[in-house]
Image (cartoon, rainbow, N blue to C red; front, side):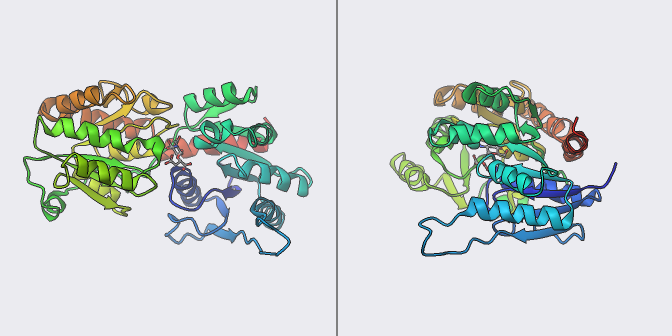
Length: 377
Ligand code: GMT
């Protein structure tokens, strides 16, 4: 495999697209490629030092003449500067707006030599694609990219349908680092949280945005704990946090629902849990499902977006109808009250995470896409 010079642009803060982009960059660097992150700040997962990783900060200066600081232009300028100076072979941008547009500008600025790969992550299409002020611009960014990938078949389908573009979109699934996400012995942690061995633990991890439907998680949990002794762990923070807090109080569940906020040791918390719930109304992939599966957790998700591509229904968990909290609770109780079913789903979840969504497989897929794109194939 030829070692390449690869530029990566993503949102560097907490969020699935930034996580995937950063993990991809780290993995490419480990495989001997030279990786240049071009982002507004240091990506939050970029904590390890690697001689093949470089960071180029996009700075936006404030001038009184600007009502809004022109980040998109500053980014394009930085991309072009880095591409020229470092002789990048390829620029891989994650999330369509503004990254694909800025990459197109950078390509023009560097005499059209720079090749651009754009990866669509979800809300860049399923939310922003509906905004009339952005639709044409997103389509433009996609069509001007040399190669476009999406994180699920469903997202590729939605992009074609919503934007009416004929651009080929390849599916490259997300992945997780199996060296971080694996089943850990978490009996001590369980004790620290004061959860007794006979209690079942349900877990939900998200950014508490409306699309995640966290209230459905709480409502399902209320029905579940009517049938068995259980605790619900909510990890993450975001706009719906207060609403969820109030619902927990209204339902009298304060003692059974633990709000843990943003956490770093997600794999430990997943490992001490018994079942993971992701009940979103929009979800192009659901990286958190994969993290749970890799830790050996059965999962319940909604029949939305890319979720059915991640969970194989009845094998690694269950796919339920959006908003049907009674069905969700029934399925959860089915898993949690049958040790054999739980064990077989746990085994299948782990196998699936390892065999279909393994880091090495997915990163090799990106490498192959880079080679094809560089050669203009
Ligand atoms: O939805 C989020 O929590 C954040 C969002 C993002 O842009 O970071 O996540 C999207 O990209 C992730 C990585 O590809 C996917 O796993 C998420 O499913 C996707 N979110 C949605 O489609 C709502």
